[in-house]
Amino acid sequence: MFKKIAVLATIIFMVFGLFAYADSPALRVSSTGGAVGQTVDITVSINGNPGIAMFSLKMEYDKSSVTPISIEKGAALAVGEIISNLQISEATDLDYITAFWYNAADITADGALFTVKFRINDSAAGRIPVNVSYNAGDICNQDTEDVFIDIFGGGIDVIQARSENRPPISQGGNGGGASVVIPQQNEVREPEAGNERFDVAPDFTDIDGYPWAANEIMTLASKGIIKGTSATTFSPANNIKRADYMILLVRMLGLTADFTDNFDDVPQDAYYYREIGSAKGLGLTTGVGDNKFNPEAEITRQDMFVLAYRILIQQGAIEPAGIEVLKQFNDNTFIADYAKEALATLAKSELVKGNENNINPLGLATRAETAVFIYQFIGKD
Image (tube, rainbow, N blue to C red):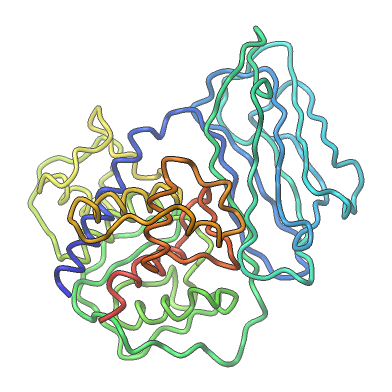
């Protein structure tokens, strides 16, 4: 079991290398959660903006699960016009949304491009992927030259009404190791002592809508491996940050070290200051360059799995699988070519599982997904 935990720690640690590219041009679709009948906002943002004067983006979603209500221009588009095929308030006939924006000169600001408000339909359940795409020539600068930008998808987690009957807590899993806190995004708190265990699992009131992750969350929480964002909430739809992965690594293995300096972008009053400083002092990470760690950056599911796969391959712990395995996932066409073998192999080994026949490769990894991912490695004897 210790070997399995060590493999997991290596996997989680190696995920951090991905963020060396955090400043490259990227479009990101947000993730959110809501109950049937509610309206939720999905925002498309840009970072590392190379300068654009026009875009035409196609937003795709399951129209049987959600209905688009409205579209608004974001803060990054301080000038110019935005036009969409979303012209009516109850646009149930739309298979997708085309958001078109243009201006006479380039914009270079990062931030929200546009936000679409969706109503969650009565038939909705599980996670609903929301992605955007474009063709060559659909994003241009003021000289009408093509601009190419990476895209990271998001989604909507449907939260069902709270059930009086909790899913059973699995008896499998390793109870050893330090307590791990994965704080809510943007939450700042003091570091907490490790080695805490629970005799009874906490009563999270916000995970009943996550039947695919509830058992894993409760199992890991009952053993003190992860905690909620409060005494009664786990915030399963929140994305996981780079800093929180480092907390997971350092506290799970009980690593501590004396250090005299830390990364320039890790403030001393941050809840992750001690763990990141210890990791740097132990030589576990050198950051992303220029003495930066980029603790607030987020990671996509497909890239987290790719790095996990590469470490397992290097250790001879897994055999590659053919990509035909991916046909079981409805959204397999969104998987990047470089990630197909990795996701196919992990899926065949049941280390990665889809939800509602979707694997959501472009979505940012959420707290719920992270709990399931961890459980697959340390939650089985």
